[in-house]
Image (tube, rainbow, N blue to C red):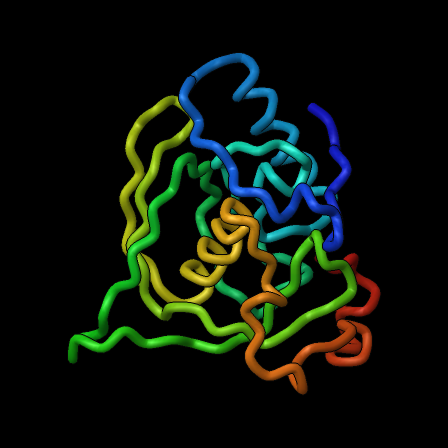
Length: 184
């Protein structure tokens, strides 16, 4: 459909809390999803949230059909449209809620990356664009991407979660091999 402008950190619209989607399977919703998909693909993103293009709705997309040049070592994540998501951290076999730390970037924070803590295992539930339920248990990179994108729905950007700013910097300095790839 169309490649939309991605809002950058500092834009107050990124700090708003998104509203739930109340109408599914509409022409407007399908057009918005196509715009998100086109915009994410053009930026080599692993995911994109509606608030990142200035739309205050609880809608995120994520996943790739092929390796992502910005995350070349990451496993594939199924392409997903997730609406009105609810994330629940899941314990490991011992009952502990574990966190993983790994590098993240963001299309709204271009040229920078940081180590961000996220829950290692989560369950996410919500709906697809037709109003059909989605309910998955995931871990690793998949869990990280979902948590990152859903943070946009509550007005949070990944730098707000950084605990150690010695592991926050410019992609071109931290990962010279990725400097030719447009960063999130």
